[in-house]
Length: 137
Image (tube, rainbow, N blue to C red; front, side):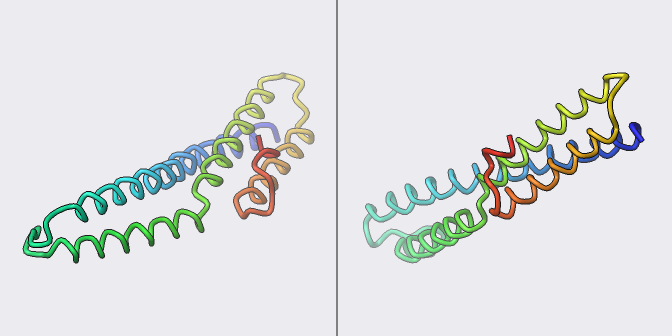
């Protein structure tokens, strides 16, 4: 049973590592994207009204960039990217600690299985927003 647990824990560590990286990209990409789009929109608004880019007037660019910024901000806020990034990071860390427990030749499979179940449950609660990420780490 220990080898089965080891295989399961390894698979979950890999899964949470990928999740951590993807949610980090979504969180940081949206955060910096919103800032960059906002600054670009502000800079465009200061240009002469007669200017155009790629045969599109500056006012159309401002409207489009403002719309993209608003959509990105809404998706980022509703998607809770930061919470999901932190939750995956904490869950991966807890799984790595559990993996270290398996090095003990007297490791208790039942205790490790129960800890794994807790990690899975707390991860799911934190991801869905029904739990507190502070409890996950």
